[in-house]
Length: 401
Image (cartoon, rainbow, N blue to C red):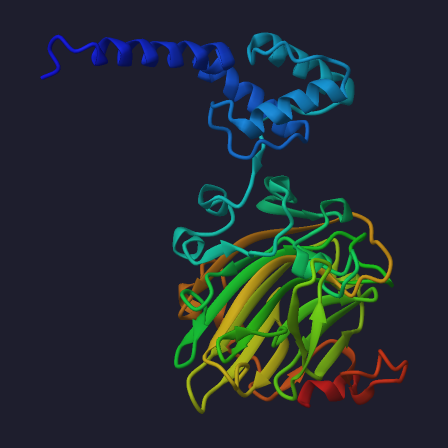
């Protein structure tokens, strides 16, 4: 069609020239196996490249240069066997195991801690810290688990980190049911199981960390948790909030103005931190969201802990499950913290949850109460005013409140 035209030869020359430039700029691209090894080594050394794909992209190149320069080496422009040997030397000096590590909240990684049907429900929270290494699949205490780490060095999303106009207000690394699409809905029954391991060092007198929560909605907007499991001022608590919302305008560090809404809460302070730490906690949740039959019951290691009669979402039709460390009310910078998660599954009946003794759970009571609590308080603005919260019940009397 272009016979005799000078255009085609010119196009061929341009194409060949660009191809030569590509290979000059990225000469190591041809050896995928070597690049894969280098990426794996970088991840193991803490220079996160994310998914190992055998391609030296912008981030892989950046992390390689950083790893070399921070350890006294200079990048020669080629990602090849020489770089792999240098990274092996660095790992030896630092006593780092170079076996492949699995970072990031990819679907492939989620399948290591939950079944396919459940993994399809979850997405990362849009306020997560920007550190792919904060979610890692590991073998831990006899289980395949997600190691979810959080550090003040990671800062956070502007609506968390600078929420009230100053740095260090809150931060998180969480996974959640896809909002309004895969959240639990009115009119249905849901059963959840999941396991959490909280090391002894997690928690302090100067911040709150929440390993998981259930969030309801009002006019489509997700609110503060309807039910949250927290370590608040170094005390393990379960917190319930339903009515009485009050909102105020806040301005973050970037000058963005938004509504910040809170509700009064019932706070169950548990008797002992010791029984919640340094061991696997196997949670099972029942959420019956059928109109007129609403009830939430939850167990830990087959022992009933909480029964809540009534609708957890009285002004909406969704309840969303989130898991992963969320830190807030930070008064003094806390140390780095890690929580482990495993064996997550959602179904519509107990019998469809794997390895759950439904027969044993069936004998649990249906009247509202919290088991294992030292006391239950009703709190709202009292802590801000340095006033005591109202005492609702203590000890065994909380089991039938």
